[in-house]
Image (cartoon, rainbow, N blue to C red; front, side, top):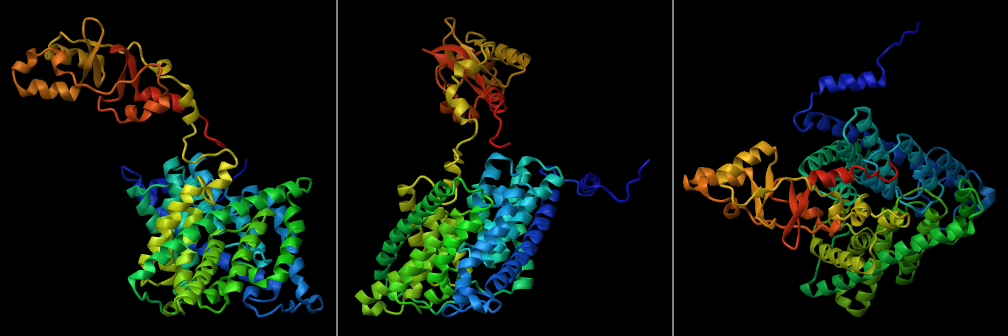
Length: 594
């Protein structure tokens, strides 16, 4: 006979549900867990940044190698000179490659697409070990020189935490998805000291809606994470910017042009990223996945030897570009180098985000644009930083097509409000042009290449192949139009239906009557009781038996007739298409990856 000391995980979950009795909408429990997820994401973000710093010191001997002048040697390996950067990514890949391959393959890459897929197709379910593996792999990858950002990893880490807690307390899928978004928002908020941007990043990119319940929970999580982040990391703006000003309204066409260029660069970045990933897959098709980061790391190391500013995330280099410390030619070199370095890091199987690289690329583009404008118009000299800031937001919008997030995140990352109008203009232009150029974003393209379309429900293909006639109810009773309203109301009540079609003697559809309609008619006057149903029936939209379900589903779900629509052909009633019939069909669909 064995004894168990202490409550089990399921026992704790039961205790939690007993203490936190949810309101009608499950509000109390959701609020409590959202706060826990937000705080947990905040601590995870703090720990993740410390892990990156420790890994960077270990692999390079410096707190941030991209900020060091020249090509200094590793202080622990002086005999290698600057050539240690060739080996650092390979050694890092030899560590995180097997880790990701063995424990969490979904931790490979930039993370956000995997979260989007989990929210859309798996009910928000993300394996708990993803958070641990993603944190370790990304910290090692970035610390060893991987030219990627930390927002993708922290989004995946926070989302995994939210998903795990939601499943521990056996919450429904809708709550799981909300808490996944809470974790993502908390991670962004704590990492970048941007609580509002964290909220909109989660809502715009992950949930794709702003439903009030989800919004409230995500805001609470973001606030909790921000409190934790500011406690440990401080409350400074992400970038320190020089004073900016706009000379006149004539500068706005320049920002419009910059938005256009940013769209081209953002879409170009996306295509280069996946092009290099395809090339890496082709070249290394006979190399085990766990070994690819180590072998590919040698190629990345050669790039870092030529351009050490690409080492790691590179925020000091971004800051210097915004401050106008680089010449025009070098700005363009840094922009192209970042596109190549980030694409190569992801392509060889590295782990890290693409948000920070898109900001870097945008800053270099904007600063270079500002230098060119200053050459043409001397009155605009010295304003490269203004254009760099606008370029940052516009390139991110062109790549990710998240305009609300782009506007807000630029304000929060910089604390600079004076040029919000140019930023908004450039971001709108970049978003619109990007949509014309590509159906996918830098996040959704990864899923599209797997055959996953997030804009389509998994049951879309089934509904496209199913005619209305195959699921309509032919036994649905119709009322004779010559009956009085009083007689029709009695038959309608006896049927147990909310609505019934009305036909004439030849079976032609005269309309539909509902309980509400007949109640209003009978209560209106005594003469209403004697009116024939054909004179009372409401004319509604009809569907044909040959139509496919996908073409009529919105009509059915929005039907005013109380649960469905009549099916008619040539004016003759053939059956009834109910909301229940559509839902029964969709319930047969197994979610992708479920």
